[in-house]
Image (cartoon, rainbow, N blue to C red; front, top):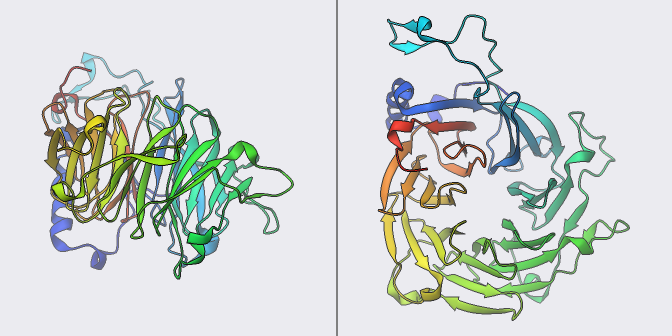
Length: 413
């Protein structure tokens, strides 16, 4: 892991390089905290772990390497840590720098490393890791969606910094079933999205590039056979592809899904049927809906975002009506995430423009833009302990951990 490693100039358009230069000159004004790292390969996923080492203010982040199958031996899932330095005692008035007009730390202050430190690296068994998420009830268990159609389950405690031998299996379980619908697929049916049920331990939803949704119960996994072939439910949703599934936060049976054909629907695993869907002829989405998420504070509020940059807020009781509010990122959105600490705050990641935008959905206002990535942003994650701390990963191999300046996002916390 290196810091600020150069990107090949020919791969970045001139206008984006100019935008990056302007952004870099203004970072001191824009951020309370900013850490930029660059890895050998891009990551398609990132997620802050729920724990925090308060003695060193160290956060852990779940990441992956994406080689597009160029170097399968480099494909991995890894956990990195980083200190955001909140534990340090900053300087007194005696150390105010008149030249730079800012406070400087005491000379005796020992700063933590600026680099992401890799704690654990887990070889990825097969394919590319499209998304990875820890089990909320036990963060030591990790699920990862593979381009080969499998969902791999890993146990963090069985891995260290030392790489495994080639004959050792890196995963605990492989979730893979083939049904009649799968048999008709001529191309690879990639697993593109996964979501753990927040209320029911071990229940996982997954979506696939050929349009199906599958519900799994990993508690039925047997150590005698690492492959779990029997899933709890299969739903043929959209032949064009299902882009994301997401569970209602405070319900153990209801989830939402969105797709390439601009479908947005609610499902109940108890009835095994579609409960409600967005009316397709009202024209609220186009270009394919890439992401949808339930609000942490209001189960009736669902956000969705598409490839044109449109973001819609839905009352799920009226999903067949017009959205209650809409605004626009102005470029294709790869994913969105609600802030788990601030109920009206939402972040969107630009798939094409490389911008991460923070919104106050109470008024639809874009309150901050992170412009440090030069290519498309693949994933974003909010930290659970610091309301404004985020991580974002991009196709330019960058991994950013950042926090907007307080005066720029001045709303009641």
